[in-house]
Amino acid sequence: QVQLVESGGGLVQAGGSLRLSCAAAGRTFSSYAMGWFRQAPGKEREFVAAISWSGGSTDYADSVKGRFTISRDNVKRTVYLQMNSLKPEDTAVYYCARREGAFAAGTDRPYEYDYWGQGTQVTVSS
Image 1 (cartoon, rainbow, N blue to C red):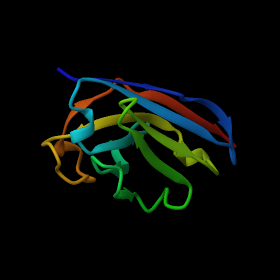
Image 2 (cartoon, one colour):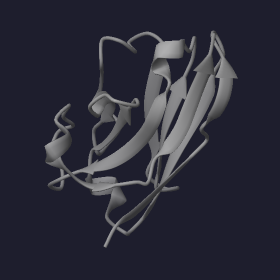
Image 3 (tube, one colour):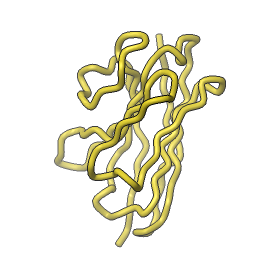
């Protein structure tokens, strides 16, 4: 069983920054790509960013490119999402997820992730 626990969410003014963390329990963290998704009220869950198992490859949604950075520390079994220049439209619950299949590439399709955290709320005020 894999457990993912997000932290770092909160309330921030537009233009501000937050860093989300996702700590994973399980010995095989380093073999799996990880992703961040978000879901705003009344909207479907959407892809934010993904990172390969090694950290050598990343991918971002167009809406966050240049503002958000995904990274990982395989020793600490943690994946991060640094969010800068936040906008009110970034307000959502943010989830981290583990890509299904060891050494598979990251993807923007939520159904290709098999474990999810409980989410952390990010609220950006205007």
